[in-house]
Length: 184
Image (tube, helix red, strand yellow):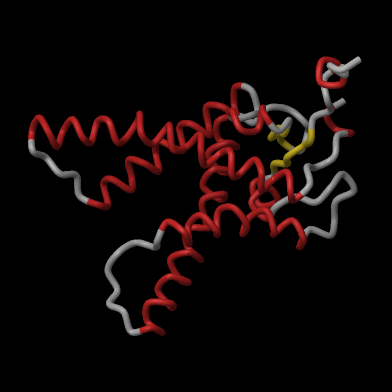
């Protein structure tokens, strides 16, 4: 049955991404900020930036891989009735989920390049990682808009990350509970 379901619209993907960022803020706070503050306050240890980045990257990877392999849906995807499946319409296995996360996080590369070019053009010194705004825009719009490049899919357009990872997002139908009119 899942094989006949179509891909979510770009608008729905952007909504999922926006909500996912809110969920990741909680994951970040609990999994990184709390331990980092505890180390800093109790032991006066400051984690080097590269290690902090690796910690957050692995933390987010665990979040996505766990949800994609267990339910096919993160919390945000459940809210918007979007599910990630493999090309056969089944749950991703761990290696597929890891590959999808790695490919899906490649948007960091263009974000860093754009940020570097921007800093060089304006004559600012290179130093800090890209601003939150640039990362936000790239994550929220870059991958969903790659769906416009997909011309070879009868079941709906898929993002570049899904194409490369051999996964696809599907739009789940409304449940009977969703269709009940509360005013009737």
